[in-house]
Amino acid sequence: MLTGFKNNGLMRLSATKLQLLPGILFVVVIVGYGVVSAFVESVSGGTGVGESWTLEHYQRLIANDVFWESFIFSIKVTSISTLISLFIGVIIARTLYQCFISDYAKLLTWVPMLIPHFVAAYMVILLFSPSGWFSSIGYQLGLIEYQSQFPILVMDRAGIGIILAYIWKQVPFVVLMVLPVYYQLDKRYLEVARTLGSNKRQVFFTVEWPWLYPVVIEVGIILFAFIIAAFEIPYLLGSTFPKMLSVVTYQWFYEGSWSQRPLAMAAMSLLTVMILFVSFLALFLLQKSRYRMMKGL
Image 1 (cartoon, rainbow, N blue to C red):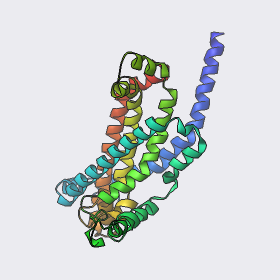
Image 2: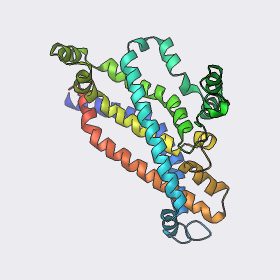
Image 3: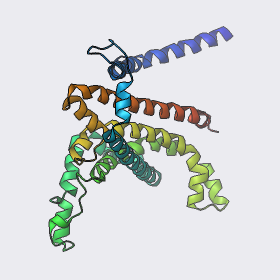
Image 4: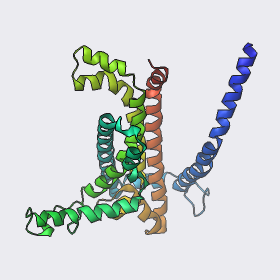
């Protein structure tokens, strides 16, 4: 009988691996090939790939002021966008999770996820530019004398337009990922905490947060990795200086001289290594919490 259980377990494990095989092949072949090609070009010192190996391009990159200004600006914009999206998404999911049982409410909330990023950028221009809807409303209400007095929120040096676009796009994703936590949360823990006199803040941090934070951190890493490497919105809504790192590397690769292409590859390779390191570190630290959630402990 024990042998039968083992055989059934192996069969289920094999079936699971087969189901994951298309996704694994896609990552290994498509993404893996791109990452390896970028790294090879970033350390190639000859006119052809693999003729000689050098770290010269990384040394030039580290000494490049444009790279560091773009890197710091990208980290700032990405961090603010991610944190605000997580905060708003958790608040919406916590407040309205019972309303999302309806499929219509879910569809209405997730509409921004269906909108392409360049359309989201255009909507931000339409709403927040000095000639946009909000400046026009402010002028009609007498809040400003001229539409040109409206604050610069698009193509600005602080990246406010980029942040607004990403918050609008990413909040529904956060809600989508956090909702299952609230559906699976044992409501008896909430009742016990309230019976013992806990207020809303104490209930959140003592009962809900231990279940939420592994998901919140994982979603935060996904958002951070996506935003810092994205191109469309920073290209359309960013200012001429400073620029997001993705825009700078694009210009180095397509618009600069041939000698700048390895710099673009080196910048993307460093960014990939940083994201992979943070992801594996978070996965390692959260493994125990995820196991406790699966067991309902």
